[in-house]
Amino acid sequence: MNRPSDPSPPPLNSHELPPPTADGVDIGNPEVGNPYSRKNVPTSGTSATQEAFKRLYIILLVIGLSIGVVAAIGVVNLLNRWGLTQPPQSVEETNS
Image (cartoon, rainbow, N blue to C red):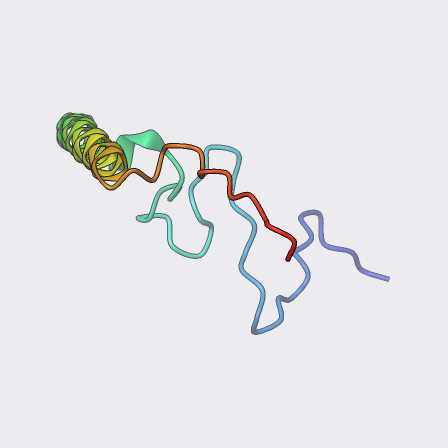
């Protein structure tokens, strides 16, 4: 039997991707690097966007809490004005 000194990898099925090399470069397409590496993501734009969303989240949170406090104070004032916070008056039953 003749065996080659450098055996070729087993054939791939149509739904399988070739395994990446040790440095993360795809064997089938060496121009495409590792998609999970951080070098493909711009860090300055991402951090500025995240900071803007954090600031927006905090502003919306403070506005929502403020509206909630004002609404709660208004409800308590209305309940006091209508006498709904007082205990009910006792009614004596008469037996006739």
